[in-house]
Image (cartoon, rainbow, N blue to C red; front, side):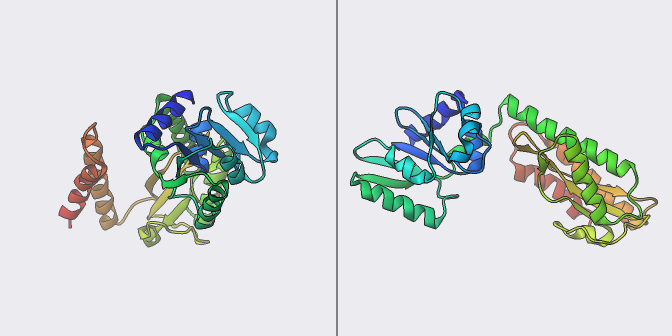
Length: 281
């Protein structure tokens, strides 16, 4: 956590900010380790500060390192502003997550102090750092993916023909939770036949037929990290046209995987797969 704090401080210095308010819960967890539902952090002052409400008194003491000043206050923004150093200051805030109402309240609070405090839009600082995962984060993502795979193998291996899409989706969620997942990354998608053509299909109370394709899109949330996988399975012998489409997509996927290495952008890898599908008509 101290390494992450140092990285954030370097970004704050680059942008010539006096301090940065971190209020988005995902960013807050990455920066501090706090897993509660209400909190804020202030970085850039002499000692970083973490504020949450009374419900998380014990949790914050357990999860937040002693490098942080831990404070308990119902009105988080008031506490953050009260703790700012005196004098002129540029206070960065996350304009991608702070609501209009929260920004207005923050503006009024800093105005009431009488100091020359300038609010500066500074969204994306922590997201840019989070984009590059360290070894521990990669291990957590792998664990989430492995857990989801095991749940998939259990549910599909038991047979899905004759069961409804909703029932299979629910089973996937239960199988992941039994293996220790905090929850699903998102509501699982199970879509059979032509329903599978909808990218975000909602599972129906419709039985899955034999001899068709079924799209299953699911993922596990584990220790703050999520997996996401889409697989298409056949429920028996396929129509020749369905088989041809499946093989085309498989060729596109394998070509894209073969091209993945350090250097190319996601768009460039995506274009390789799409070209194969386009060329097939």
